Amino acid sequence: MSRAAIYGAGSLGTILGAFITKNGGQIDLINHNQAHVKALNENGAKIVGTMEFTQKVTAITDSQMSGKYDIIFLMTKQQHNREVVTFLKDYLASDGVIVTLQNGLPEIGIAEIVGEDRVLGCTVAWGATMKGPGVCELTSSPDSLTFGLGAVSDHVSAHLNEVKELLEMMGPVELEHNFIGTRWSKLLINAGFSGMSAVTGSTFGEAASDRNSRKVLQKIIKECIDVCKAANIRIEPIQGKDVVKLLDYSNPLKKAFSFCIIPVAIRKHALLKASMLQDLEHGKKTEVDSINGSVCEFGRRVGVPTPANDKVVEIIHRIEAGDLKPSFDNVRLFQ
Image 1 (cartoon, helix red, strand yellow):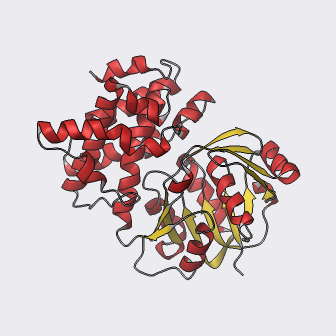
Image 2: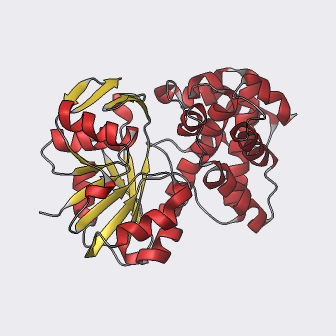
Image 3: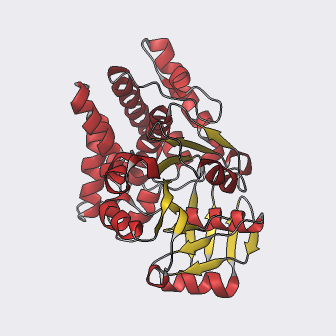
């Protein structure tokens, strides 16, 4: 049996680890937070929210790591990827694989460190919030716990099927042949809903319900679609829904339909609070440069303006600096 770990087992990683363990898998949950690790080992992983259960798990801190892992699910923030992945390389088996479940487009940078053949990418279609040491809230509907799994290399990892089997202990896994298109479908959602959740200090549902916020959200999504068109990237459906067909527009009628469908499209994740907002609330730096900033960077590369995404990056950096606070008042800054 392959040895597996979740590195950066915060809200999402703890819930994934609890599901895997609950359904017969063996996996180490690794986190730098000693209080969280202590609570997990003493009380188990307590999952609340749209599902409730407590599961005994195996948790360690990064300083307690030893030996080699065949599979490492990477769930830390991207700001320190080079440092983190360089550290993890020493704990990765010779044919081991790092599976990144991060936002944005992290696979390229990780592949530069460990090699393309040792990287798998995974998109996560559900959300969670850390409530306290050992306690995590699942904020997405139980029927939306899906994953998209793909490789960045033409050479299929020896552990692909094992990774798929571990993820399936939580929910359905779609093997993606157009993985960059899958990444962009998730990035589109994160840029729009996570971006406006952080800007306004609200849940996804609240950001979509407010008409002024929704107008900005719609512009952010449109910019993502236009960038992909210019880059010849085909955005993949999300949980069977063709987001481009639903949300793209080229005339006033389609624009009105797109505007009306946004709250419906996110209803299963309406309670989700962006991890960027959670970081802001705890005085931490966010991943905005890897999310909305990735859209801006691609836009510059293919000659597509991205003013709404540019403004999200600017506002969130101002919040990080203490010049602003997350609030619906920030929506006026887009005008």
